[in-house]
Image (cartoon, rainbow, N blue to C red; front, side):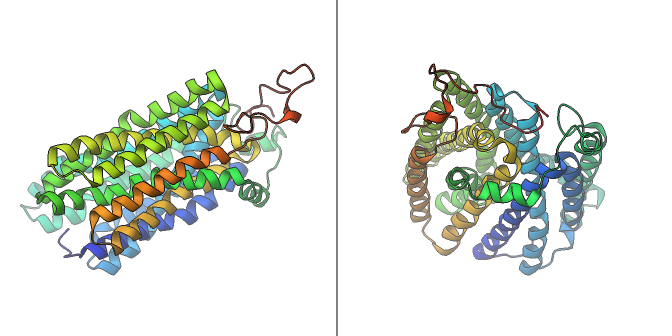
Length: 405
């Protein structure tokens, strides 16, 4: 705002912001396995609140890039969120629980934009005698303070897992010490982790890209004012209110009927519909049509993220944190990749076509996901996981650590 940024500079700052989160998510995954999510929430939210409060000090494109790199630390909180709900909820509903928590987390971004733009910014203008420059440079302190206080509150009123906090459990020898390095390498060496990394890049990565691309697209293609384009593009984020939860729910329901193969089929179908709607969106020539397609496009993006959350906890339960971190980083890696496409290609239709085609290809990868002890789309369940009488050898394998320590 008031910085006179070019389209390329805007995309550069966006890529820098989501790119920094990749490293943070890789780091936080194994740390969740070792230290638990509570203390990490405190560190991340309080640390990220500092650069967020400094937003008003930005005066150049370079300054904005540096600022967004540090604010990107906050994106790491997703890893603790998914780890936490995986530990706290039963495996039968883990997809729904993970999806609702993550969906409402991203919904918070849309609500923040609405509250900041429609309520707090006008109030700050009045307070500063209609000085818009001072208003926007100071209003960003509000969410920073809220984030800082939230980190403190989470630390003092919550537990790491149903049995308590990791530090206490270790002190009383109710929990084994976990090697963060070992957990990370176990997650890295599992091929399923990287297949889900790619698929998450093609759903959450798309969402992060659309947070920047949608408003610019509507301004350029339909000659709308910045405020009108922003209002329309916000519809994409508002689908988080229910769509991610629906994705998690259909994953859980499919699992109750067909096991893991049901979850994988839902992942495949929703990603395929997502890719198809991207291609339709790229070729919609009317404003009304583009808005309608945008809504359905967003629903399938969020629902695909929801089905991902139903699969990750089963990949390797003792290393859930590391795998969540790697897969979560895939979302940001996807945003960097798609962001580069939009930055380098001036033709929006071509950029969206590349995005849609990539998503369609990623949907096929579900066929390659084979999780030990679980059904798969092609191979079925591994023989060594089945008892002599044909029953499951261990039908109640936990999907998260600590529940049986």
